[in-house]
Length: 271
Image (cartoon, rainbow, N blue to C red; front, side, top):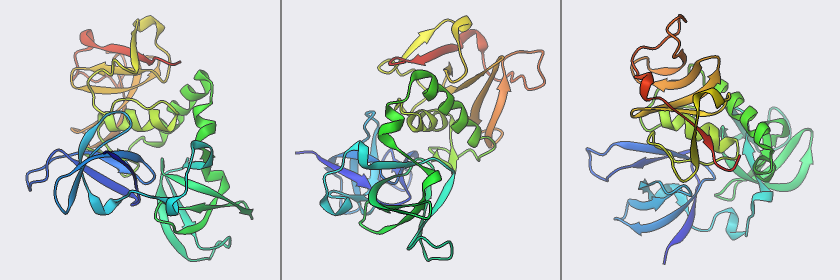
């Protein structure tokens, strides 16, 4: 019988195998829920994300019964909206720092609110306070209109500008091309496939003249986020960072490495 588990560490690496030659293929942020398919050995579990992405993770980074075994729904979960935020022991600015959370982390909101601080519980049961202006209820994100979600895609994408390229990365600490796209889409209430191949289950192709800022642009083994005016944001290994490029040869930011004749624009199906 499969079990649900929650990531309890800030970042949990996912690997394609458990040998020394393994490649990092993904990163899971604290609060992410996965399905444990089997235990490979004492160290590794084979898991599946909610979008169907599979790989090996260290068992020590997961909890089968998080939040002290409480039953939790999306209305109780808060999502971190800023690149970093500290969890403090109390509501004072000089209080002890329990841990630091990355953008996209999900935590359980508790009842206490004071001094612009929201009391939260981490998956491992630790309790502290986070600035309220750094959080948003995940249920609110899911209920946003299509245009509001599109605006969030652009806002979060811009927060990732110039962040380092990290193979298999999917966090503010570093991303690869599909890590960038899938991260900002999940933060905007639209979970999509994590790799750069076209996600037919959640995305639909559109004509180039219909493309809007926030749509996804796919190339051969690469993808990015369309910003409008022939510009797109993407994470590029050769430059080592997230940058803005153009497919317009008349612009200084024109990127000639990709075959734009094969470029495909796509939009989230539920929009």
